[in-house]
Length: 321
Image (cartoon, rainbow, N blue to C red; front, side, top):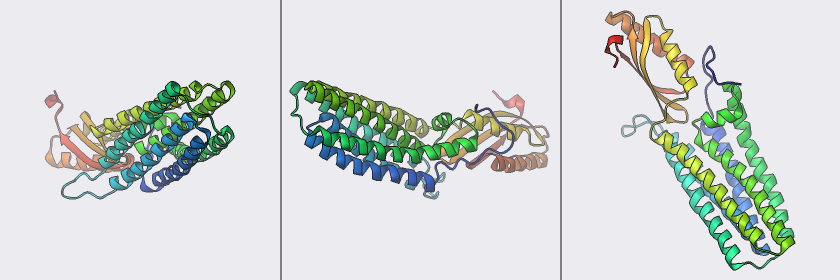
């Protein structure tokens, strides 16, 4: 499927609503906390740096979920005198902090632990306990990821695009964080299991240490990706091309409108869009322009979801630069 414009109203993107996103984050947070404790116990019993790195990974993910829950809740506060466009940007701020937490609490520790194990060695312990913990953790992480995948597929069906494209395009960075981190967690579990198996069969701690380093690198990639994504929205990211085209088409199909000279869009939050447009109206009469502008505004609110603020500036074509 493609993301080319389709006739009619765009579907409401409710991926950032308090309900489903909150559930996705809470499920992930509870799962990660339980897994972190189990991995820590298993890592201590097995003397495995990869297991301890995985415990740090799950602890970092738990901290991340708390911050993401804060992002969802804070961004839902109503506008006030000091924040007249609302608190939607708080979503991206707290999600950005969550990405930093993933890097500092998970990636740095894992890489340090892996290097230490390779250089200093480690005393092997009960490998069976670690394998059991990893297997249980894999199942629990899979359940957590399935909730995020369910939400992603629902949004993709509404927008009639592929789920992978929806995940790239959705402004709900909390959903992205859960999907990326849970996917990374499953990969990390496989790396930890491989490191344990290598150390068990060869007797060399290098395998376990190398697995720990790879887990740290994986976390760093996820943290940088999410950090860049949230930073992009914090500095004023425009709506997706499909949405911009829908806005432009809606305005230009309004009776009395000649063309859209310039269109500006910006995400104020996962479900809040700011639109400003310079519009060339075909009739220069003030009453006719006002009527066309009101009709264009009505159509935009009807056809384009999540519009919080809309500004139309009558601008003759000859005035465009």
